[in-house]
Amino acid sequence: TDGRVFLHVTFEVKPSNQAAFLAEFAPLLVASCAEPGCIKYQMTTEKDMPNAFVLIEEWASDEALARHQTLPHFTTHVPKMEQLAKITVHRYETCNVAALAAAQSKL
Image (cartoon, rainbow, N blue to C red; front, side):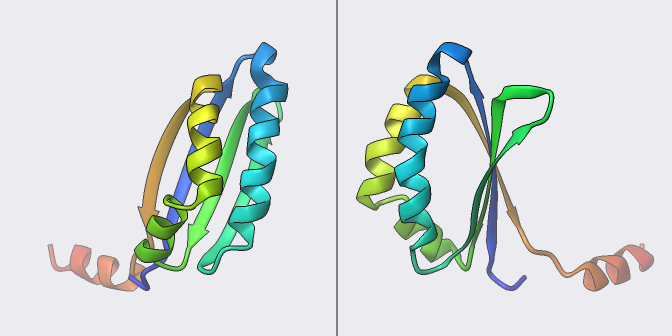
């Protein structure tokens, strides 16, 4: 792997909490995008589910992600967002597809 870390974070937000949730997320987005090691920090919505949000994060390293999770904009806004939404986090790392294919072919 090249050390990059990817997070796929889903937020299920009740319609009554949507405005408050987005108000907490906005400053987190701006500050996170400016961090060293942040490659991508993009919020999306599902076309047919306007209260389902997906945050796609890409970090240069585990260290960059770990640093991000200690900064004031994270420690201030994320706990409030957790009160407003059901959050699910999936973590991914890059893989060497050629090496995986070669290993599979030896089985």
